[in-house]
Length: 467
Image (cartoon, rainbow, N blue to C red; front, side, top):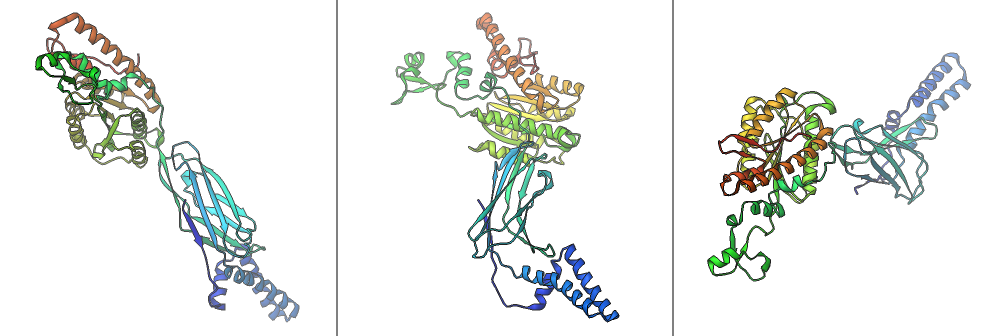
């Protein structure tokens, strides 16, 4: 918790400097008193009224003396601020607590305290603090509710010293502030078997290899400490030594999250714009997959942003909180990084796109490589344009979800889950009925949801639409 202290010493007294400082700190009421005093003194000389002169001198001296006294006041104050939470989604409330302590030997007077808050976070935080005894403190609490994502500075604290008559007001400011990160809205997604089948690691990897048949298992030599349940008896009989299955070792599930940030691919302004909805979709998917144990890397149309980390959720939300549209016109730079990660063995690639041109669709379709499961989420595009893009991507082996906004993502996500499961069951039944004559690429259709039939035509496995 940051702490800042304001201190001051006595120093040599310079009357003219004190008077100048006092005049600069006068309030509207104080300036009115000065003007009235000068007027009274001038009229006293013109009219020769000695009593009016005394009154004018008193009226003029009162704000000047108050200013000198306030400007010579030296308080040693300590400020501590705490914001909970320091990272929150748009539309949620955060509580900010400010503790002001008097660490001097003298009590303070009335203090006007204002914590400087950006206007997008709410109203000004202003408080009137009564006398603080030596060693005492006062706690002030207020709430903020951000409506726009971003990274904001809360503070520093501004303290105004005032005299009892309200003639003089002197401002003092601390130096420390707190950072508040406002992330895009996150919609909860249903947990289903679809995520597990995408990851390409752990148990899902074992299921994928097992569907390809025992002959496709890559065994290795038995090592001391290996579980005997992993012994591959067919290879043991063939090699004459104990062999164990590789597919049951633990794999690190990996994937990639891609976000199209090009300005030409999005339209609209404010929270309802397609870019804000795409950012919210990317945040929701990234948080869901990260919490389910998938090691993700984050890529945009400008290239890879960061690799998988243990704190992926926080890093992703911090990055999306300040995400802005790019001036690029092509996806090729980002898709090149996407192809590189696919070759590295990612089990899942999720791309969040805005409006895709015919050239963009072809580039995205060609970026799918290897056995990685690729999912394209088309956000807010026109219905006919999205349908054309979806048909091309599905023919290339992509799974496609079309959503109008982030609010419709959970239904599409659940629909894709059900569609993937139905496709997997159909593929297993077809292979069981076809027997040995099943084409070799049938296993790829089970894993990726799309393959080819005997004539080389595209077989669509997952439509990605809500049933």
